[in-house]
Length: 219
Ligand SMILES: Nc1nc2c(ncn2[C@@H]2O[C@H](COP(=O)(O)OP(=O)(O)O)[C@@H](O)[C@H]2O)c(=O)[nH]1
Ligand SMILES: [Mg+2]
Image (cartoon, rainbow, N blue to C red; front, side, top):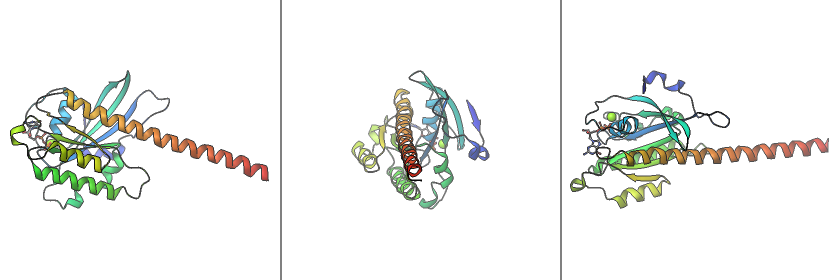
């Protein structure tokens, strides 16, 4: 497991694909403080829940095998800025870096659900000028604390549906498998998005070739 300091962020490489064997995927975790972003990250990386994580912002690198293929996950465990305007809680730098985003709230904390709603809206606004949207999943964490639940599963699902995101409810404290599904599920969405992009690029390539052939014929 490698911990990178934040100043290295822009140098992080984007996806490799095609003939190369290793695929890189940059995943950004967003959400209010105390919702379990670090707990989810550490669970995915080490399979363990250690309880307290401190306020550290890091990018972790982790190689995982999916369907026999090595996937290099770079995971940016972000810090929710203290006393920020909601419009500053996601930066353009983060969006440029991310291939996929995990938006985390706690099912016991309505304010954290509202933060995710704001962040979804902000991401949509910031990426409205680009042709493709970044794949996202919404995650309701702390599912083990049912007696303290204040956000229903239905509300979480509706939010995810309205933003065209995947949806999961998990407990980083209780189980590894659900957390694994979050990261693998997002990886699937990223793969699909890359396939669509590649397909579009392929069609554009064919169109360019065809128009080049026709313009040659006319010469
Ligand atoms: N009961 C319970 N507590 C959790 C869970 N995930 C995280 N926590 C606790 O919530 C607190 C905040 O977790 P942390 O990962 O530091 O949140 P972050 O600020 O979003 O990174 C810590 O005390 C964790 O032990 C969970 O699934 N269930
Ligand atoms: Mg944290």
